[in-house]
Image 1 (tube, helix red, strand yellow):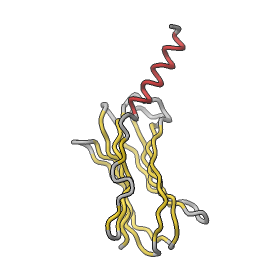
Image 2: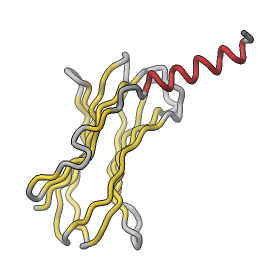
Image 3: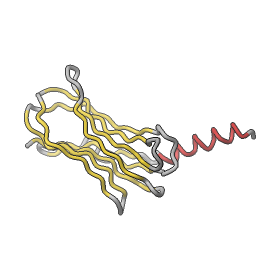
Length: 145
């Protein structure tokens, strides 16, 4: 094999390893006044920059005040959380949660976004470092207050 072919194989393998086993976790779960969007995935410190995974769903929300958070949790380990209170107009929203390997060492960024057809998206985001291969739960939570 040539070096170029080996390099491509290693890159593809690293991407597969970084996002292997992405089983939905409460992808469409809803309880009275609250909803979750998330899943578990395997993250690697040496995944290629720009590697991305996402989940999305359409959700109807009544007008009102909401508590909104996005979190990344290493199974049996570190916990990262961003949260905010937000007023949302009634309507159907595209709710997206994604994680991306940044160009900075072992850093990943995680984002939750709510978007309607007529408005700019509302966004919560944060970053965290992955120092060893591990399973992470990436989740966004929304609760009407």
